[in-house]
Amino acid sequence: MLGSSLEADLNATYNDGKHFPFKSLHGKKAGDTIPQLEDAVKRLGTEQHRNYWEPTAGSTGYACNILLQWAKQHPECVWEVKQKVGGVECEAPAEG
Image 1 (tube, rainbow, N blue to C red):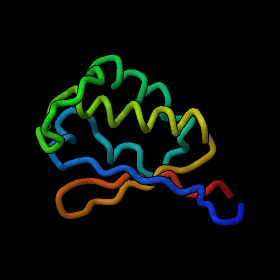
Image 2: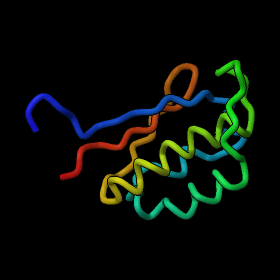
Image 3: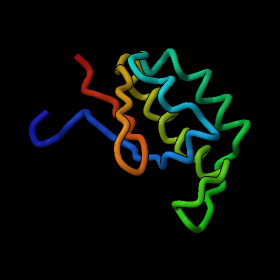
Image 4: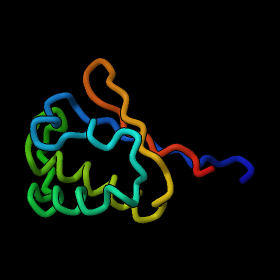
């Protein structure tokens, strides 16, 4: 694919980990995590707080919903979760 990438990333704050264990996705095929992400979205909801940095259940659920949609679109991708200053980065590496 000329001029495009199959990588995507999502940043979540460290405090979002209180509502969902993003690290638990690391190394797993995206398709295998669909039930876990669906459960999180259902349990947490997707209503975002107006302040992105506020660690609310709805904001975390919103992030999980983004990952869920990626997992459905690219079930063979493998999640790569990286700890970084201020949060966690979840990547869906290019399918190989």
